Picture 1 (cartoon, rainbow, N blue to C red):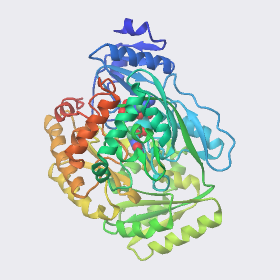
Picture 2: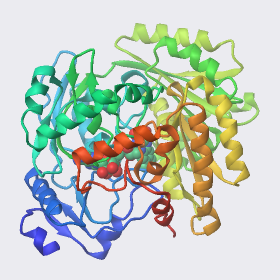
Picture 3: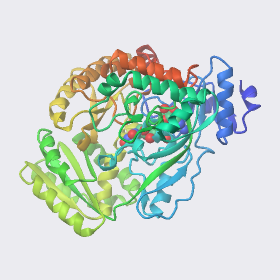
Length: 545
Ligand SMILES: Cc1cc2nc3c(=O)[nH]c(=O)nc-3n(C[C@H](O)[C@H](O)[C@H](O)COP(=O)(O)OP(=O)(O)OC[C@H]3O[C@@H](n4cnc5c(N)ncnc54)[C@H](O)[C@@H]3O)c2cc1C
């Protein structure tokens, strides 16, 4: 296989033990061993790889960017194509007034991309908490979101145009098409034309059930977003609205034209400390109309984790331990007043173009939260703000790297419901965790009602592993009861594809299958994700270490 592919592929192809082991893992609970790992030099290589796979039954291609996925999305049993080694270039950012765009390849790491955009005073504001780990292709594949998504939305809002390799092995430009352009495309009679024709037919013939199925939450990464492709308001048909978040199951993105926004020049952070979860929705409701850029939260256990791993956090925020620890003095004093650690910390970031606007908005936030039984503090210096953001962003990473004997087990890690239902919902899920003797950390995007629950488990023990499907089943039933989504950001992968039926009807699941068949009739792109993922597969690929 390696020799055969080597004849049509110019990049490296590796199948040594170390490489296969490395690529058997991402940041999820799973281990899946591939047959080989290919590092394409360019889209020609990828096209040839796809053509080879199409002509050799039994093989598949799973595209991988930085591999920080928490769902098993970039894991596969056949060929892994890692785009970070060579397909990592970025175009010039044009001089701009206001919004602008940039071309980027999928293998570019976000941290490098951000360094370049910030030089121009611009940002791609949907970056995830894993911004120091991930790459642009995976951000597309998962339709990522993060701390600024409250104001700016998810990755899907920033895609202007892409180049995508379809399962026929050819590369196509994907952009919104007006009706006449769509008609021309559908009349082509080739693979691309048929994709448009069949998908348009599927969407038109099922418009009512598709519209009903659209999750009524502020963010969603579950399933195929059939409801977003045809915009009746704009009279456009945009395949990118479906390809984004499809985890490389419909096509491989080789280039993206992304919209960038100017960074706000001034910002302050209001930190709020809660004794209980109960008042969270009222505080969120009081703060949301004041247009914060972020409204994030983390729980007492995450805070404890931050305190425990303070040296590491100090390093990540570029300070020495002593000066970093001293920065917590005001919070320590609040802790004394509160008689202990807060149960919950909420971060409200106010960002605007002038100092005056920030000052006014911060005053409004402070006034709005005054009636509640909480403690708060306005943090003005970047260096002091950073400690909270590092703690918020790094909590899961610290758990992954440092917890002894147990490991972070993300399987109920990304629900999103209406924010006002969170205090009712959380005790119910915490009860399920308690009944199953599972400890967990919680952090999330309070403004969106999107929370990350990360259990800590000893997966060497069969009894612990056996809890995963039991708890997941109850958890996703509960999310369905609250009409939420089972994943707002992290996506489906191995961990959630079997549970898509908890939030979507059998008719919609059937349309997902048909969508996959339209794009990938031979099932060569990342099989088992989004459609046809089973509980048996999930259970039999959990890491045992
Ligand atoms: C500590 C931590 C925190 C996280 N926080 C967040 C968060 O706040 N928000 C969030 O959304 N996610 C979060 N994640 C999950 C993950 O990091 C992000 O979704 C990230 O965008 C994935 O990028 P990646 O480059 O690592 O992708 P990968 O893991 O390599 O791939 C992700 C998916 O995209 C597909 N893909 C990759 N490249 C392409 C391509 N060229 N074309 C088509 N599909 C492709 C893959 O097949 C896979 O299914 C977090 C993960 C960790 C470990």
